[in-house]
Length: 99
Image 1: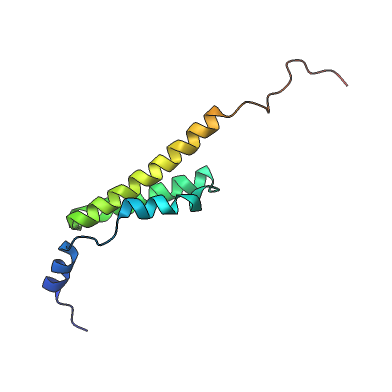
Image 2 (image 1 turned 90 degrees about the vertical axis):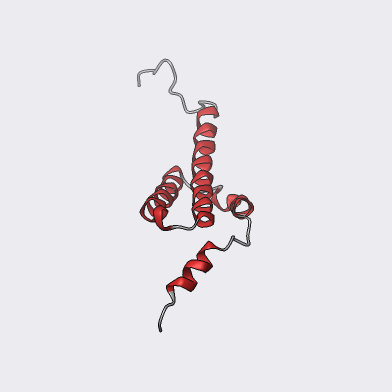
């Protein structure tokens, strides 16, 4: 199969027909039970992928990738904030009685 790169470039320059922010917002419940480690890995993967190809992406694709990175960093920040706000119910007692 011969690829016509001029046609592919024109296709890549076309505006995206979906709302990236809306799609990511709808996907948010999927990540509710994800661990911090998983969220960090998703963010790291998105950043690494974007860094490798950002100079070659069409503007619309670059903006979509940046929204994805922002989405995962906000999810991670929200999770960290919720952990910091939780009451410290697992504190050790001030006095440990001897057995």
